[in-house]
Structure formats: C-alpha cells, structure tokens
Image (cartoon, rainbow, N blue to C red; front, side):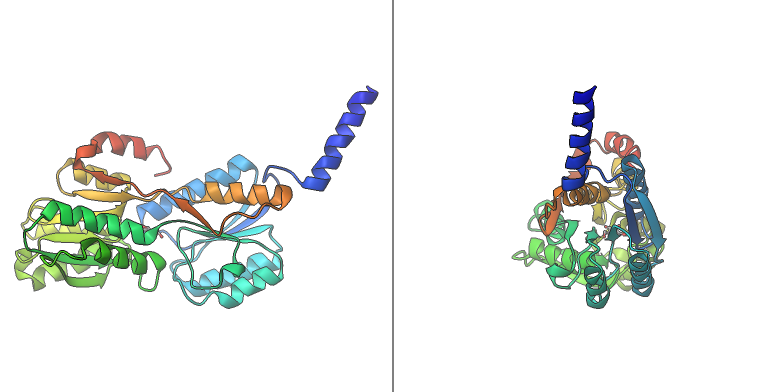
Length: 320
Ligand code: AHR
C-alpha cells in the first residue's frame, strides 16, 4: 500500500514538473475562415472531432471570410486567456498587431492551412502544405499531358490576397515554365467557391469564342472547378475532353467528376490540419518542446487513372 501511495505521489509530482502528455482540459480558440468550400467544411468537422477526441474545450468562431472578424475573435480568445489559438488566416497580410498581442499574453498561436507574412517569432508553427509545390505539380501535369500542342489556359484564382491564391499561381507558372506552347490567357478570382467559379468560367467562355479558344482550366480549388465544369457543359462543350480540368484539394465531388470523365487531375490537400497542431500543442505543454516553424502536410497528385470511384468512397468517410 505504502509503495502504491509513493508511486502515485511520484507520478503526480512528475506530472506537475513536466506537465501532461495530453491536451485534455485545455481551452483552444479556433478562428475559422468560413465555409467557402467542401474542403473548408471538412477541416472544420475534423478540427471539432480532434478536439473532442482529446478532451479539448474548443471555442469555435466563424469569420465569414472577413479578416476583421478573425482579428476580433483572436482578441476575444486572448481576453478569455485560452491555452492556445488556432487560426486559418483568410489573407496573408495584416496580422502583426494581433499576433503580437497573443505573444505578449504568452498564448501560442498555430496557423492552419494558410501562411501569413508576419515574422515567424509571432506564431508557434504553421501546419500547411507546400502551396507553391501544389501549383507546380498541377502545372507539370498539364505540360506533360498537353505535350507539344498549343494550349490556352484559363485560371480561376482563390481568394485575393490569400496565401494559397498567391502561391498556387506562382507554382503553376513555374510548372508550365519553359513550355512556350502553354499560355495563361485569362486569370481571375473565383473566391474558392462553386458559385463564383461557375460565374467566372461563364465569362471566360463567352470571351473566348464560346470556349473554342480554351484548351485547359486550372482552378486553385476543386469547388471552383466543379462550378466551372457545370458552366462548360452548359456552353455545349465536354469538360475533361474539350477543356482539360486540373485543380487542387481532392474533395469527394471532384472524384465523381473524374469518374464521369469531366475532370482530369487534382492535387490532394489534407483537411486534417488540426491533428498535427494538437500533437505539437501537447508536446509543448508536456515539456516545452518547440515544434518546427513549418509542419508540412503531403501533396499527392490524382488522375483519372487512380480509380476515382474507389477514392470517392474512401474520401467520403474522412470528414467530408
Ligand atoms: O487554404 C486552403 C484552401 O482554402 C483550400 O484549397 C480551399 O478549398 C479553401 O477554401
């Protein structure tokens, strides 16, 4: 009995000295961008699931696409003295002040899926994919698929000023770089939404001889591609054949389009950004371990050759 008691108090003492390996009992504020895409909705679902699984009290705030709402949410989390803040920053600039306030309050900030232009000292880590690489993979796939043929490309950009819109554009241009036969003839934002993707694609089709002058569409996310596919069909053309379609995210619906031959390729972005962020938070709370400034998630290319129907079934169970 005495030994058991001694062991128990030693365990408690160790717990006090080094903290606990779990995040149970922690309060985390999460400022989400909104629900512009299927991918975003899945990220929200998975973050909530991860928090519940780990016994974290998650304070969720939906910014409805506005940075000012995110800044307000962060200030409210700071006032509530949360243990950590997760934020998916809608745009890349304008974060210095509020991140400085979180630092001052000694509240670690974890960036999810998008990066900011602020100094790395102002946040603990960023859990993101290599956003430039994603665009590059899409561009290289297109260059390889088209070969020597002349190809006019239209581009649907993500939210203006967001890191994925900036980086995926840059990466794609790198991917098609050195192929003079590939030209981006139109590029406009579709705000990462299906509705805008469709609307903007309609205007591209109208401006380009009903689409006859367009060989490929590059969309910064699958949702815009799905909207654009609808516009292409309504214009009397065959998406996936008359106009090649390449995009990013790998949400279930793009695999349905791929199975129907209406989309050609997508680059996967995992919606589970919260898992690695919670792991890093747990390690930090346990013994002060600092994570690397960038926790990189994988980017995988899928094409019609990858059994899109089977991938669709698999994906549907993963937060979507
Ligand atoms: O930041 C990640 C991007 O934001 C996803 O690719 C897009 O679907 C989302 O809305």
